[in-house]
Length: 438
Image (cartoon, rainbow, N blue to C red; front, side, top):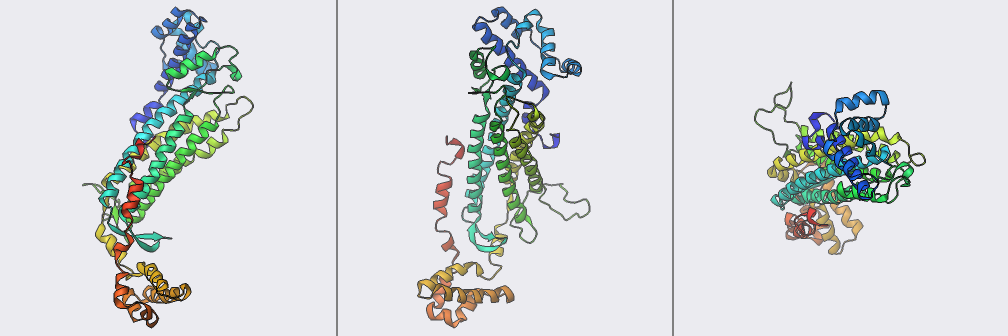
């Protein structure tokens, strides 16, 4: 992934240096286990740790001849270790190294992404409580529906990202398996105890049955989870973009001193960060379908999955990690305009209270069909000509038969829509931290 959309902490996990270091640690831990079993001399295992090293340029040079990355690494390692290198990789196959390393990298990447979600949840919780009872208009189909509060809108996103957090924890657990089982996964030339030892040392669990590779349904689930998180990011980003539209202007990305919005139009203040997040979400979701297609490999293994994972393993995790922190920063600094929210809410002259009137008429004895007709015909006049919905209702003879002026006025009280805000907040923020729940 390009540096523009990368955080150094995540990029480091996928660096060539980091990958090869994990390769070395797996091989060295395997030697320790082999020594404990009496398969290789204890001194040989010790020598691997003491003398083991690698040089990326030298590995690349060897690979140009061997056309095999693991063999190139082992050859270079042997140049440092010396004669005892003959005990390295004993009974193992390349996939043991590659798949276990990928599991380590994806697990570490998950830890960083979980931290990103935690930061975002904190920002959403703080802002939701800040605007818990701030009235705003709820929209369906992009059209004014009924009043809600800004706090409830943000609580919805909090609940969604809390689910994302738990999904990613599950995906991390599922992907964190180790396979050191040799060719076609039968342990014909290596003891399962070696696998268990390496798994423990690398922070993984053993793969119950590997067919020379770790089954790719695990990876498919991992990338699918990243895709869901990306879609949740896009949903929040899209909401902010709509709220920042000039005609709406209920919220705005923080615009810093000296920031420029357009090379041609000096007045512009654009939602560039959330637009960027919408694009990033597409990149992450692009990894999902190839990951699903990687599940159906030939027999005990082929390497059609390898090129996919070498690209999307780093790219999807790096860019999603970046997106989570960018969105967190957006939420932490987002500027809201409650006055504009109220103005928008009042824009249609009280039409947003139509359901209140409908229910009141039915309770007063009007059939639902007739009540709907009375309410809608007055609403359509406001749509077409503007004016006060309440005034029109007071003048409607059918409505007046059942509801006097005082009754109608009481139906236009915003607070009636907010009776259960506390109930909803209690459900969403019950433990004040979704990340504390197991």
